[in-house]
Amino acid sequence: MKAHGAIHYQWINNVLVSVSEGDLNAEGADEVGREFAALMAAKPQAEWAALSLNQRSQSLLTPQAIEPLRAFLGYAAAQGMRHSANVNASSVQDAIAETLFDGMGIEQRVFHDLEAAVSWLQDCGYSLSLSDLGQLLSRDSAE
Image (cartoon, one colour):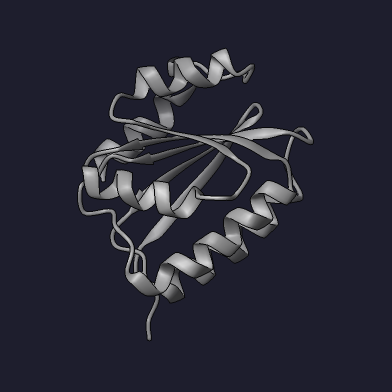
């Protein structure tokens, strides 16, 4: 089957920011995992956080994508991911995030407000501000 959905990544200091696009199927999850593995070679610190921007209500997962993404998150934890802030548009996305992170050893929080997510990551000791996200967010809103 053809890959559907995508996740675009960018390191901002010690935070890996991702923007989800469309419904991710198992093949799309496999592509995301390969891209993520390459990003680990460029990680700026041994311990880091993730900020996932899933603010488009159509950004969901097919059931077949859950296990590949859980494997990817296990790898992320082994590579130093300690915290994850997920900014979601819907309660369905919230439930998916809870399922994905369950038992991963990553402190994960769900937000519906970007400012609150960034503030939490700052409180956890990560170097990120709303102004750091400006270009990434303007690209996302233009799509």
